Image 1 (cartoon, rainbow, N blue to C red):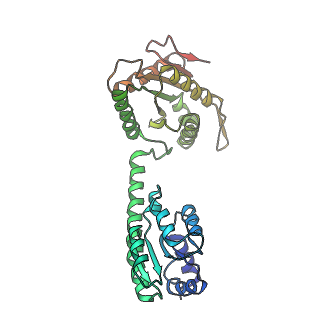
Image 2 (image 1 turned 180 degrees about the vertical axis):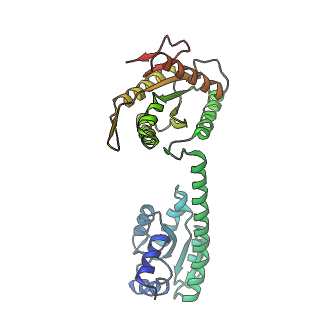
Image 3 (image 1 turned 135 degrees about the horizontal axis):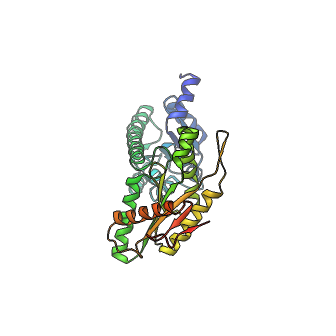
Length: 325
């Protein structure tokens, strides 16, 4: 028998096997067969099992009886396979029945069962079938998690957790495609923290990094879920606004400027007041046909805002329509 420490380790690292069985006698027997090898989760019927699957993203396989109250194994299988959640609809499901004909077997496979086993269950057969499907599912799961981690690394700024420059441009290119196909507009905001070098020089780079992280927390709170907030480099951030014209972009930019100015930055016992300078550009107001040119216009206006005294928004190249407190 594995030690308590081993069991705790299994609980922490292994996706569980969800055993769905309304017979206490059968559940006890199956627990005896499987308990030493897998982290078992038990449900008494399909409804309870489905609720657990939807709440717990750490189920690796479902072993279910067919004939149960409230929700049968067939109904549970149908609910699992038609889920829009990839984690749920790809779960391996092994069904069990003591029926003597092939009706349940055929229906189970039609509904998407991964495998089938007859009752009374043979221990060696059960272990062999579960091992094959569990191992395959766990391998696929690990590969998908690795793929997601690599994608995050490729598209996320490691310091702030915001999208990086590459992802920002990828999303902007999609907006450009929508503009060319449907005429929808999009805008960009370029934002730079004023006197950031002075913060690093005076308080150190650790405080400077925490300032960047705090700004990165504020910006998404002020924008929409469809917007892309990214760290472009250094102390410079960008916001991509789909379906937003120049006026709407100026309004959003002012919200961001004001939010940063009003925020009290308390970092490691140091209290700071920050401001930002912002340049904006909108596809509906500029004569450009690519994302790079639109970004360069917004970046130029960002530096216009700085030249005019910082803590302001520039919407034109000459700065005559800039906004400041």
